Image 1: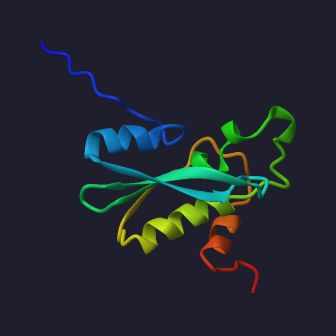
Image 2 (image 1 turned 90 degrees about the vertical axis):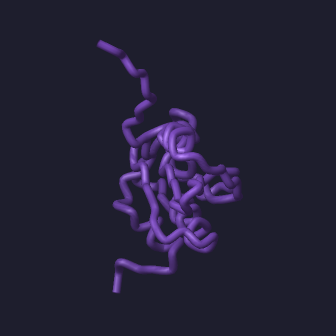
Length: 121
């Protein structure tokens, strides 16, 4: 028998790296808001075929905060929405969204706000 090693990911940290390595494409870096609303640099990918790769943990992940800052009652996914908007603005018609590693429990409300949507009337 033959063993073939392939990288895998669970949808959290570094899922985008695995996908872009296997599908081909480039990272694009931009300024977004972290889970506490502070500006940071985060990445989104675009594959060779034009699919956007968004990793929630890039903009809204626990790895971006100190342990004392982890508070799901005040954190947001707004920065992830900014990454999605940038990928759409870059012409991506399809997106792959990795949702692991989140520092928030906002249910995507911040993400929708960054896309100009509201869930409250």
